[in-house]
Image 1 (spheres, rainbow, N blue to C red):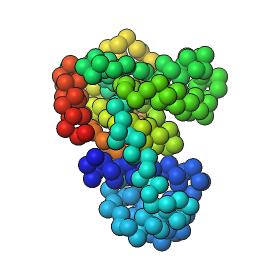
Image 2: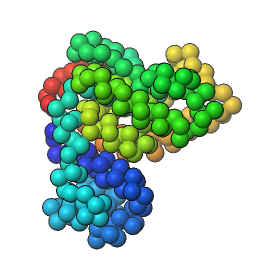
Image 3: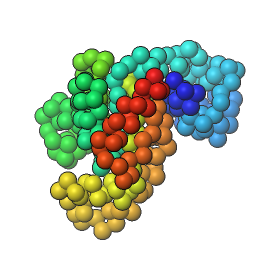
Image 4: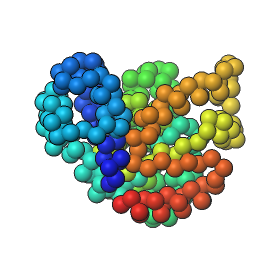
Length: 248
């Protein structure tokens, strides 16, 4: 794994542990003797952490420096490929082609969530709320991981906002952000015949841009980023096969 990928994975692990233990950024920074800004950069995968800082952070999180890196070991050995991005990024179309190229199963995580909950995603959110969705998503991911070490997984667009589930994904899969411009996300969803983004939402495009801006830093923690604008799913799948092989 590249240095950038290792730092990104470490940052994801730090954030997941901090949120799991209920620490704010300011509180953990104080306990570890680092600045809040430095910790923010570390969680974003942009800080070169020294051994001394790693020791202080691990002590503050009541773990060991080795444990901060441990989640990455399984992903490094895994042949699971997880595709991330907003709706309309091409996760399903590229994912199916990639799975065919690699001769592995293709799995849609949202579909598994629906099967597990016995509800459509819309019904799940309406009847049970976002916290229930997050629980079902985490459980669905664990069930997918138990199915084997070779697969292509298309994830839901909001998974990166769920720190523990995102950390688990990064720990067990090679992650790829399919990045597109907001206009392309919007056009692709509408091109699939889905008019929901337009319903009673006159500022739908502005909302989409805001969501992408909010999640971009999280998506950027993926091992690979693949720009999809103006490119066919076939072309993207072939390039992804090459890049995954080079990065292995």
